Length: 496
Ligand code: BG6
Image (cartoon, rainbow, N blue to C red; front, side, top):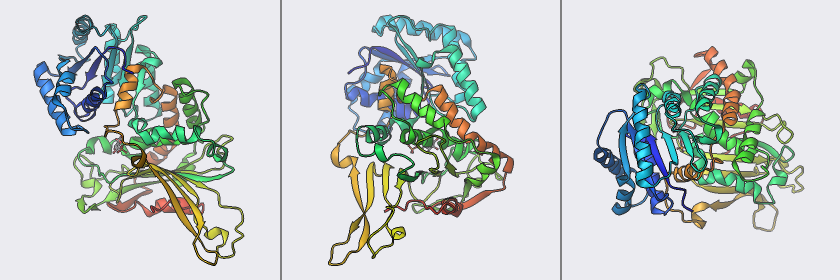
């Protein structure tokens, strides 16, 4: 189904995100016949340039970053409907001009006044832009026309700043108009978590503290900080990944079943479970966490310099490039079940997965293998590199005597479905245009996420360099992350 006609206004039209993801995703939607008709794009820039120059730059970006062979007629159709305009929140009159352009385009193109404002700009600009849009009436909906505001991550840098940003945005727009993006929700395998849990009868009955021993969430990256030093050094692994991406995975895996598959029910359940993460005391936060920083090493045969020597990183930086946490969720379903989360940069491999470890069989009648030596029963939701689901269980080794070994049953997306390669933004952009905010974060969910990580942020800030451990680039991360689980008699799932 095509979305209703609309005008797609991109703030930050000359930026990396627009070139690398937004335009390639719009192209893919156009190729699949999923762009509205009529449709137009307004590219908002800080320094005036001609429509033609912006179109050309975006065409080059598209050719570089397209996930499918570019068909020029489709690409031209998308880009020829683009108008470029200069606007800057420090110059309010430029928003009056923007309003005029949008009004003109609504009549000229027949896009009926529906507008989507995509803020592909640094977070400090979110509220000032929203304020100016509201002032000139561009966020006012009337019966029959909609106005939407899409904001990118990071949404705040701690609980206080996230609350304040929510409060400011909600002064200018209603919650249903705000689409807070977390690109993890655009991943098929992440969306599939709800289908796995709630469209099958066999998992949900055992999805609780009676049968699940613990859950591990791993997001390991080979990428080092690269040229993002100034952003990353002020941010760190915890802020960059945990309250957003890892908590999206955590909430989908742990939420209660929503009554309906629609935004209100789903987002309420997600926010509820995040709010149930136990708030740790400063001592608990230190005891239940590991923060590491990488030293020079080799990742995939390439030399990686020491984090502190990377461009725009302070030479005495105590910013973590690796974080591991142990959390618990205080509710009926999860009481007593540990959740281990880890994420880091410059590691030996790229792996994103949720591993659910089930309790051991209570008694093994097979003399050959004592119960504590049976292989573990894991259900693994693989997000990268292998998209799919793996079940690990024990089986009899063929032969006259009883001997037991662990085996795997694997479902891989690529074996069943042949989806055209995508940027991961198509569904998110399509949903913004159709007005479905199920895959976007609501204010209370964002704040609940920050609330859960705040004790770690505070405790780490106070500890300074104390407790920051090193690991070699290209390794599996700091040994202390193994100790975090070993203390509970557990270990990270090994790759098979
Ligand atoms: C981004 C972070 O949000 O997610 C990056 O800012 C990180 O530091 C990226 O590399 C990871 O995304 P993915 O989809 O590659 O796991």
